[in-house]
Image (cartoon, rainbow, N blue to C red; front, side, top):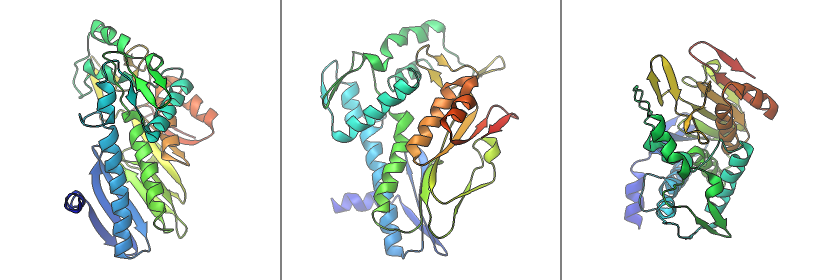
Length: 306
């Protein structure tokens, strides 16, 4: 067991810059880091290892790219009931809340639409009949749940990618926070949460919603960004966002290019940024109503902040 643990942590690097320690690793196909200030090397390594371990644990448990985890068991259930642990029940309860708040626009069963859509920057837009054929396999309301159990209809799948990374950020942050009271920041691919008692964190925002280019200073809070800067199709001058409406199977019309939200937890910020994208042209109206700080990139030039 110790040998396996040692091999895993070879993928984690730890660097020092004055009072700041930075642990780096890769999880969920994203560059990840843990920053902690004002501690010795031994504690810095322990904190970074706890963050990496939690990220890898959640990835192993919930990634749809594996065939040996709980999600794979649920998706391969063939209309059989699958027993869930308490953590997964809570995560699915949150997915249910997202589905209800979005009137069905946020749906963790919509991953099957990737069988028709390949957002690789090409012009390969699927035929309408390809998309239509998949719609019977989409719909959170078709999923059966009982106390501690779940059952999918044949051919349906769960994909927790829309909430998994933000959940992992918050969970890893909580785990690391039990080890030290020092200033702490956990960042998984640009979704992050932080606290600071000594001096504010300065977060570089290049590459997210345009108004955030530069530095954002804060002591406590979380940031999450949703967008289509890398995942899209372009055909006949029309850009097709990877943000799909599961009710139609097609990209959300007039969706912002990117939405960044500042909140108290990464799961909260991630939910709001995703829900805003799903609102299309009404994204800013929704965020103003939520009373949160946000930044929106509408296109190459148009931007909004609030």
